[in-house]
Length: 98
Image (tube, rainbow, N blue to C red; front, side, top):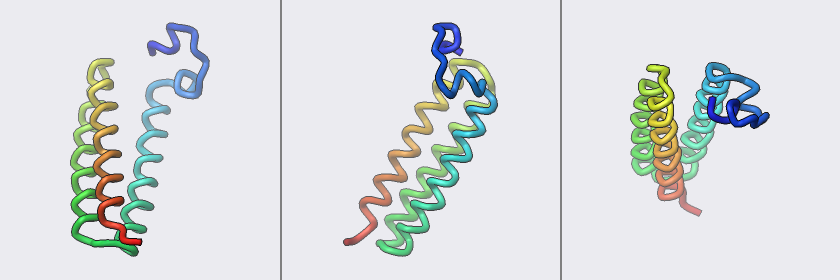
């Protein structure tokens, strides 16, 4: 919304809030499946599962916050989703053995 008001013509303002949010959810779900699958295949399973579990909890909190629909809640959801991505990455990186 802020980008649209500022005249930014990127992908998110063109899609609108609902479609952009749906794209984020789909992208995150695909990333989670790929990271968890590859991590479980090539790494220390408990560590990968811990990172994946933490990521899922944070992602669920982000989804709940974003569902409220207010701009402030969407900002909280964005920060929670960033934390979820970091948890997934750390779990994957710590668990995968070369």
